[in-house]
Amino acid sequence: YSNENPMRSSPSSSFSNLLAAIILAIASSQLRQTSGLIVSMSAVAASSSTTLGLEKLTSHANSYAAAHGVQVETKSSSSSSTSSSYQCAPISLLPNAYPASAFRKAKSLANPFNLLVDRISRDSEFLQDTLEDVGTADPYTGTLLRMYKEIYLSPQKGKFANMADRLGVFRSDYMLNPSPLTQSSGGNNEYELKQVELNTIASSFAGLSVNVAGLHRQLVTRFGDTGEEGVNEWLECNKRIILGDNADSSEEADEGVPVNPALACIPAAMNVAHQRYTSRFVTTTTANKGPVVLFIVQEGETNTVDQRMLEFKLWDNHSVPVVRMSLTRAHTDLALNEKTGALTISSSNTEVSVVYYRAGYAPTDYPDGDDGVEWKAREKIECSRSTKCPSLGYHLAGTKKVQQELARGGVVERFFPEQPAECEAMRSAFAGLYSLGQDATDIDKEAVMDALNGNEGKYVLKPQREGGGYNYYGEDLKNKLQKHVTNQNGQIELGTELAEFILMQRLFPPNQRAVLLRGGQVEADGDTISELGCFGTVVASEEGEVMHNEFSGFLLRTKGSKVDEGGVASGFATLSSPYLC
Image (cartoon, rainbow, N blue to C red; front, side, top):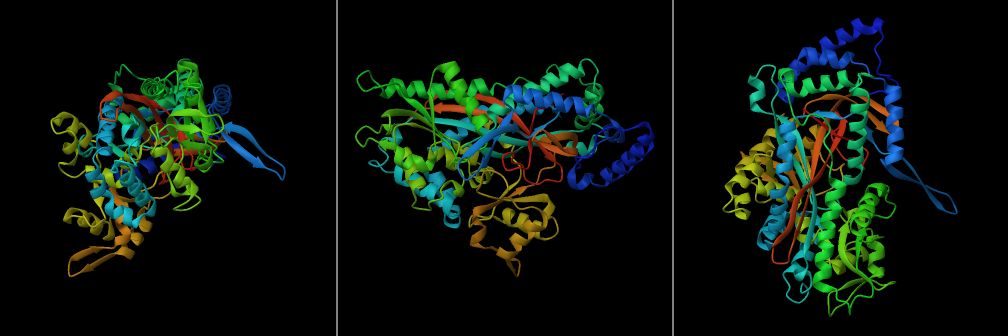
């Protein structure tokens, strides 16, 4: 990718563009078996030669981003102070073609996955059995599991935690992967929706994604409907890549960029939890002033605009105030009433109804160490009667090891014993997932040996981490496995160091051409892949009664096709939107 590429093809370069497209098409056909990518030559040629009015579209996108808060914070420090400024968030200039049927399926899975997390969180035996090895190999997960057991399995210490409601703001991430039908369907591309992971803590970019979808809808209608700046041709090329020959007969009623409800739905779920807390615990005699929702955030956070959008909507739509605080500050600034379980902000004696974590999902959020102030703050919050988003049970339910365990036969059914349709729907989205712990089966070990014997490109090695940048791919994956796998006379032994990882089938979503902006400037123009995230919200009582459960919005992240990792905040991807077709 080159920032120098103006994305315009002059007449004199038409022949070279066509020749390059033919060469690319031939190379593409040689990659079909390993990547599953099937694109007709006409689609590749068209995508290579399509021109965009890059200057006008980029200017329009930057202006829209500034006017609608599609921004991230940047900080600069001097000897005397720290100042902040804002710049355009990492975005894709135009939306990416996406099968409407796959989008609808992802939406439909939000409710059952919400329920699955809640039910897992209440099954202490399952969590302990599943995460015991991981907790030994990974101190961070071990601390979460130990705290979960000490609080929720202790009648005295967990007295107030066990009476608290639970709020989940989850995001299930998916990639398209070539269906077995694709290999035999000629020019009709078929893709399956496969889950990458289920995030249960600090699921970000709901706010920004709403306005990115708005930006893309405006660009498509403003310039596409009038036939300007090459937008229609660009979208049609990517649509053909996704649908193949089916693009000619597609009459999708939902075609276009859908409206994203995340900024309405997520604050609404927070309000449900807030109102339930108020009705259960706050009386006129105990209320000095109404309770607040507490956002736990990272110190030096740059994704503040995304968080503030939720905060402002919570006030605008529901008149619920928000206070922001880091885990480090929470140790001294929060007080727990040992008699009532009420959590209050010490300086104002304001009660906290809901604690929403946008930090605490990685060891780096606990800089004071294993017995430091951040972990003590987390424990104090968890022991309170405030509704946690997430509770420790919800947090643990989102680990990669739990995701892998759910893929085993009969495990999902444990939580949905009389709902075979829901089980089948969730199972259909599971990719291949393999254990590397002491519970590894022969099938798991066969996958390990497959990766070691030249097929490392078919897998991803994933630790129990969130945020992007931690996975192993290709040769790095193979080298990591080789250090901890022994093979003696056909007997495969996995080192205990591997217990904190899972091995996952690598997915191969279709390549589409995109222009990626970072800091408002063109960073890349070329082949990209995308990952769809669907938000879900759930509110459940202490006894497991579900008070609220719904699909709550979406995001699409787009990155260069050669980039392995996928985090936006970590610098790997950009925010985009699905153009349904």
